[in-house]
Length: 95
Length: 498
Image 1 (cartoon, one colour):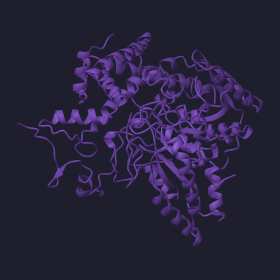
Image 2: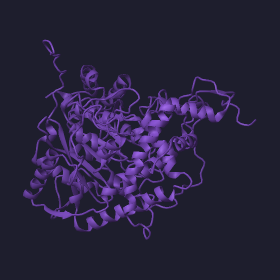
Image 3: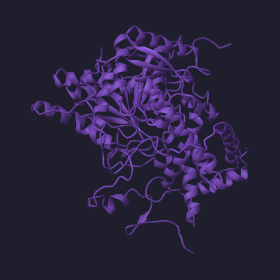
């Protein structure tokens, strides 16, 4: 199955990545190749097979509901490329 | 033999016996790094100041007759996707170029507690996505055995640093072979423990159901030593196993009972380089001479492992990497945006390299409406079939031996324009990640052109002790692990090229 430039534009939007015209063309071609390769999975009948998400048998791992110390607001905000008055600063979200 | 050529355990013994101080080791090591790093480029960042400080602390403890840790005075390199408080952790990505974590990864905390000395952060493919190190946003690390060749990936930096004696040991991460494949290409010992054996807290997430921290060392004993230190339960990683950690060191030389080694035909078929194949066959003969029984096996679904992996790994990556938004940390575009979606999209376009973009796009494609069942669900089912193959095999054998990679190290630039060919270089390492079992790559020979060949030993879940012993048996019989590359710049060509 071919992945078109239009489909690349759609998933680039879902992925929140701006692509150049050249990137769109290259990725469409490369992802089509990879998709062709993974089509080989259809050789297998998996109707009766359970899916496996994790290689571990752990389920519902809880911790005690206890307050623990964490990072200070200051420490975390210092990592931000843009902050003001104790908040992260971003472009306007709501019109 | 110069100090930096010794193994981690040998240098530790010398420090404890006071034959050399930790400070002297660090000084000597940095002199060597200054000489050889321009040729190999294994590191993204070095911390001589921090290393000397820790060395003095270890020496002082010894002066005062205090107890020292299991890694006393051993200089260690860390792959740069493992968080270190106060030291940049970039994942070899522009998006994290200036990120300084406010906390240490679990493994970093553990090695510090055992008095290891962190000397620097080693290079990788961006976000550990790649098999050659060529996807680093900063520079390409070179293979110490032939600087025209790649060191492997994604952990090419840690592997090249250990091979070039620019670190005594290193920690990396293995999602599809990123510890084992570069170790095979660089001729050292790379161990990926069972999923959950070592806490992933502080390892920058790539594909969470596959990621595992592993070790790169000069010999098998050092692998056991480092695994001993970093294994164990950690409440900060909910997938961390509660299974007890055995003593890996005390009887590493005793392979108990009659060893049954599985030889899977799918790992010796089409696409396998003949020199690699015969080196592994010769190794199997050595096991046979030492009383092991070789059992022919089939793992019929392993041929589907790469396809399965590239659906699951990219799907998980597309989700894990959604956090890089330019808001809380990392790169923010200098172009002003009046819309937050445009801001995210610009930050990610500028911050990610092409392989990372490719995988995020592919991951979102296979998860997107209408395709989920055909791809992600299908892959999850095939993953289960692969797991069943291994469960059946381990009813018959104690471990499985195969080549680590189908070829020796390839040349820089050889596969970079063909992503699929690059992915296929992990064909023998990927199944262990899908199934969650431990694997170790050890040197088992050299090609005619002098490139190392790696052999992979796979074991049952939480059976690290067994595969370490099996690896040690081979190491005791051979000297491949002691060979050193000749780190001399190639002579400039003389005369006139015609």
